[in-house]
Image 1 (cartoon, rainbow, N blue to C red):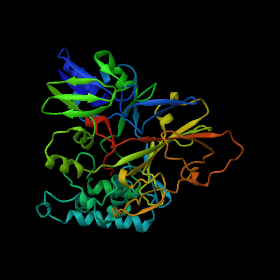
Image 2: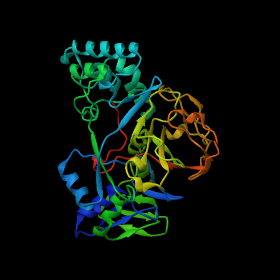
Image 3: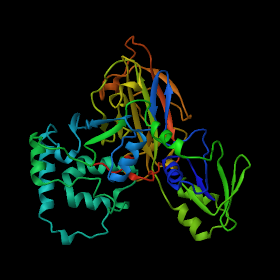
Length: 418
């Protein structure tokens, strides 16, 4: 029997493709979906962080479109970057028009300088930061690529490798960089110029679409212990499962911690793994169309969040008429969280902390919390006042534990942005 731990996308897809072979899926929550779930609050539907569908592999696209036949809508991306007190289109490196002239000049000169460096002089094992400097130049690195990605990953980019970057981060031609500095737009850029999203119900319709093809799922049962030599797993509800093959979709350190008979070296290696976790603040706004954008990146350290998205611009069905909704994402390393009082200083990678200054009333570190306020259009929402309007709602949810990449990486989880 094949034992599958976790009924997120990876676990559901595994079970779905096993067909008639014997298996059992065990999920600690009371529903399937993992972090690819949605929930309802006061007429709004919120996803647990942004989940937009774009694909690298035709087979994966065919699978998802088959599961959600007729329920997906295609969108042309409207994503922007807020920096230097202005909005520019994403990706940054081909859209510097509108930034202060000295910033545009720095970006152009730095990029041109990269063209003079021979490829042979660039080592294959260079860090992510070196990759950025080699491919984008010092100006683009300084004004977006380094501060944003250090805010996202919460470590110095010198500590990250670069072998995974090439398909995610666009290396433009000189013509494209110059056109972007002049405000000339003649083609789309990036790995996701279009994306798909469900017309109704939020992203949770995707894991639910797997369920008719998946049998033998047990909910509300958390993995407690694995005896790998005896091939036996024990769960929080007292069940004991013997297996031939174990498929785990939980974070690797969590799995290793539960395995009682692994070598010391394996335990120590797992203990050295690091991750970035995300605090997700969902806002329901009692006012229509607070933004016409799909999402906005915030590279500058004065903003503790790295991205703000607008779900009702993906699907108007995600909220009541005359309202808007936002999701706000704050990245942190779990060990740096201290009861909600502070987060790792964005962009430094040095492990220092500073107060978490949010532009909305402070939410506690509880699983879910509602506060009342009235927000203004981004980025001026940090000047929020009551204004006599109906109370807006904020729901603070923690994407608990590390944020995993699903079995199919095309599902668009957070990665390097450029």
